[in-house]
Image (cartoon, rainbow, N blue to C red; front, side, top):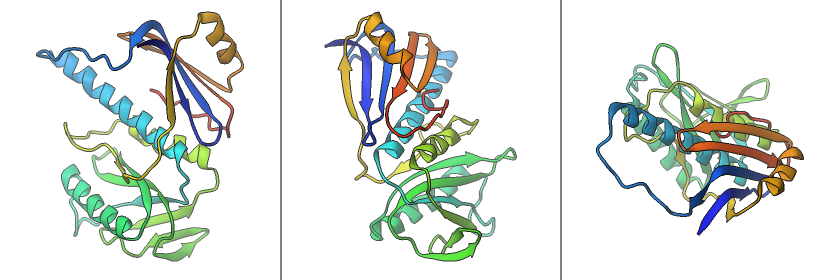
Length: 235
């Protein structure tokens, strides 16, 4: 099956269109070969792009109640060691699972190389009120935390994906985000459209972006739904 437009439909009525100037074959994969250093670097960038899109898709397709931030106490976790931080986050997601929560969690790296994490969580949490609408997580156990109620779900979807577009040094082969298994995904369709047909959709869209790549030009837009205006959606 060949197509030139991928359409993603989100629960709030938003539709995201990705138009390719070259026709593509659904399910086609390039045969593996020995990669040069430049190709390996490009592959890592593509992996990060896929992670950003996946986080955005999951955030837009599910209802979350809390935006949380988790840091690490140096006496408990080496916050410069990604694997140590990842192990701590894995331990915390186990607690969320037992509590019946759903989540997406992503890393952010300070300029000095230390890591902390942000997340979206649905359901009730074990919290203590701090001040000005900010709470602390009682059962995290690895450092300081904050939790705030989500007011704008569309905007926070772009916000959480944005952290993955920053310059984060994630060791090769390590997880770039954590998400509970029961989360919904957008509905995807693969269709053929003429330039004129796609042009009509693009011109009426509330968000538009042109993406140049080694595989040609991609033109993305979003229509309908509640308005996140994030330019980081498909970097």
